[in-house]
Image 1 (spheres, rainbow, N blue to C red):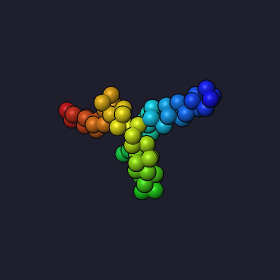
Image 2 (cartoon, rainbow, N blue to C red):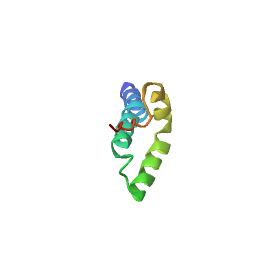
Image 3 (cartoon, rainbow, N blue to C red):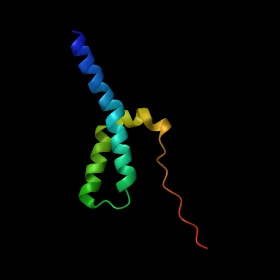
Length: 71
C-alpha cells in the first residue's frame, strides 16, 4: 500500500511539476523557430500539461524577450 502511494505521488509530481517545466523550457527555446508540425506538437503539450503549467504560472515568465535597440 505504501508503494502504491509513492507511485501515485511520483506520477503526480511528474505530471504537475517536472513535465510542465520541461515543456516550458522547450517552448522558450523553440518558439520563434518552430515549423507548423512542431507548433501543433507544442500546442498539444501545453493542452496536455495545462494543470501543471497553471500551477507553475505565477513563477514563470511567458513574456517575449525585448527587441534589441538599434543604435
